[in-house]
Amino acid sequence: MASVQLTARASVFDQLEHLHQRIAERAYSLFQGRNGSSVDAFVDWLTAEREVIWKPAIDVREHNGTLNILAALPGVEAKDIEVDVTSEDVVVKAKTHEHQDIKDKGTVHRCELVSGEAFRSVSLPKPIDVGKAKAEFHNGVLRITAPVAAEARARRVEVTAA
Image (cartoon, rainbow, N blue to C red; front, side, top):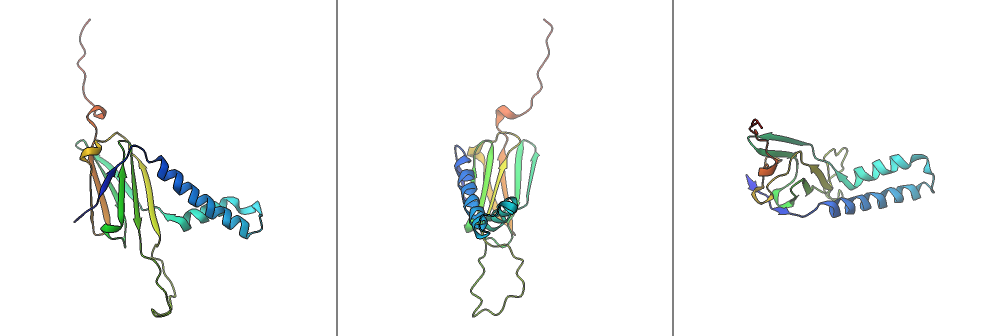
C-alpha cells in the first residue's frame, strides 16, 4: 500500500473555480467551432467537461467516528495523485495514462481507457479533523480516512428537572 501526500487547505473554492474556467474555455471553443450556433450550448458544456476531466467513482462511509472515502482510480500511480482536504471537503486529483503516439505502437482500433485528469470534489457529511487525515493507495483504489471532528460527533445530553 502506497502512502499518498495529503495537503490541508483552508478552502477548495479556488480549485473549483480554476476547473470551471477550463471547462468554460473548452465549451466556448466548441461553440465557436459551430460558428456561434447556440443550438447545442448545453451539449458543448457537457462535452467540454468530459474532455477536460473525468470523475472517479467514490464511496463515503462513516464507521466508529471515522469517515472513509474511497475513490476508484484505475490506471493511476500513487505518485500521480494529489489529495487536498479542508474540514468540510476533499479534492482528489490524478493524472492518468496519455494516449501514446501510435506511429510505432500499432494502430489503435479501440481505447476505452480513461486518459487525462481525474478531478473529484466531495463535500463531507460532517467536519473532519484535518490534522489526522490519511491517504493510501492500493490496487487502483484511493482510501482517505479521517476522524470526525470532536465537535461534530453526536452525544447524549442528560435531561434534568428544573
